[in-house]
Image 1 (cartoon, rainbow, N blue to C red):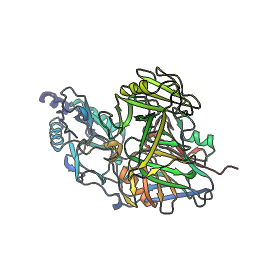
Image 2: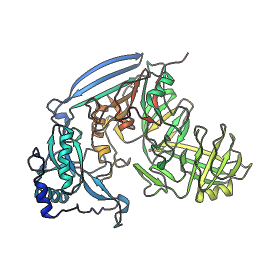
Image 3: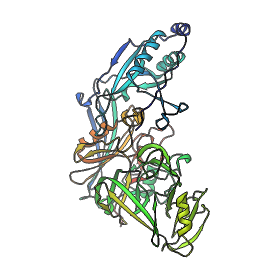
Image 4: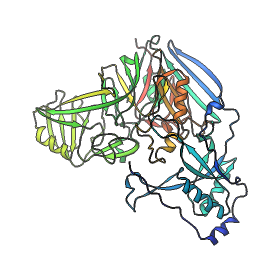
Amino acid sequence: MRHLRTRGAARRPARARARLATAVVAALAAPAFLAGAAEADSRRSEPAEQWTTRILAPGVTVRAGVLRHPGADHAWTVTVQAPTSSRWSTNDPDAPVTWAEVSTRAWAAGTARELADAGLRPRVESVQWPRYADTPHGVMGYRVRVGRFTTQQEARTAASAVTAAGFRTTLSWTGYDIQEPADLENVHVAVIDPDTFDGTVQATHDGNVAQREATSAVARKLDSLVAVNGGFFVLATGDGVPGTMSGIGAYEGELESMAAGSRSALLMEDGGRRVRVADLTSTVTARAGKAAYQVQGINRVPGTVRDCGRPGSTPSELPWQDVTCRLADDLVEFTPAFRAGLPTGPGVQAVLDASGRVVSVGARGGRVPEDGRVLQGIGRAADWLTAHARPYSRVTVGEVVRTTDGRRVRLDGDDSLVSAAPTLVKDGRIDIDAAAEGVVDPEYTSFGYAWANVRQPRTMAGVDQRGRLILATVDGRLKNGSEGFTLYEAARFMQSLGAVDALNLDGGGSTAMAVDGTLVNHPSDAAGERPVGDTVQVLPARD
């Protein structure tokens, strides 16, 4: 990985700073340096828990909980943003500047001096690395803050003075900080016992991988007992086709998207009779006679790889959360579950019938035949299709899914899986491989900081020692006062529920749990429940 060059903060003349001092809000915190120097261990303040329990069916139990941490005292504050260069453009003097909450000690000390010169009263706080399995320990960096305020509006007023002094700011709620326990966390937990439950558990994209639907809407349609949102998916057209998955996904035994590197997945076999958490990879190969070419995607736009993690993708072949990589030479398979218009543009496509016979070869576009498949290629992949996918010839597509220890996962019609990141618990121990799964970067500490190290709404899944499936959500972003979990807190929570293996599913505004078709949590999006890609549904037995 490359080292970054940060840019200095904007400076104002001394006379301007002096004039601004008279406009400073009076209720600013006293100056402090290295406040909050240690990562909080919220076990120091065990939460007071309040639970209600419902039994929906034999083997299906749902609990709603309120976790309160006595003594937690939080406020609104003004956080100064640090400028930093783009990760992959560090040698480019014209690289775009991004902004981070955490930076170097030198930046924090210099910024604090400038704020003090402007008549403000800053404090510098150290931020510790969470206890991930594959990142450094100790101090991650430093942030600069001004004031503690009861209301967000008071903080906004104070922020205007900091901005006028020449600094970029954001408003922060200290209850999201990893250093201190949260005030309140609203959680929902479903436990499904395959030894007692006579229904099924399955992942579903509801028949069309090129669409988004709310978790509760799918639950009502399927008359499910419990439902949660599933894996990561494309939101914007610039990143692919909205609704398509950005990690491995399989429904009714059919692989409908490929893995983004080696990332954790929830595998539900035999209709959920066996459930496990494992890091999975996928390999897909197209063959025409003796010629072969690696397929790098299923049901996505050729050349566009959300969350990266495919061989040859740039700027990274490794998983990289919420980043869209590119592939110049790309072969993509489209299945009948892709029920939208096929992507158009440069390249070639071959339409195959159910037996793999080439029906046509030509420009990209149209739709996938109901009983066939389509291969689209760009770059050298287009050349390969032109040379080998001749009309009436046969092109077969073989798919292999493996765990990281090399064991093959054979998908049958009652099997399904969803994928996200990272692993939270492994063999009963907290084991968060945050860097390996691409949700943080040890050399670029601002990347993934808010996503992983700040409390957020989260959806989690795991398996306990008895083979029971655990599905859990926590509300966040102060919905009904709930602040959410950091990744480490999510892992500890799943471990407290008895999970021996667990993973983080999609979260934030996607987090949703429906019980008997009714949404029971409070999603964080202002518009309400977010339409998502795939979901996990607990379905009653059918006569």
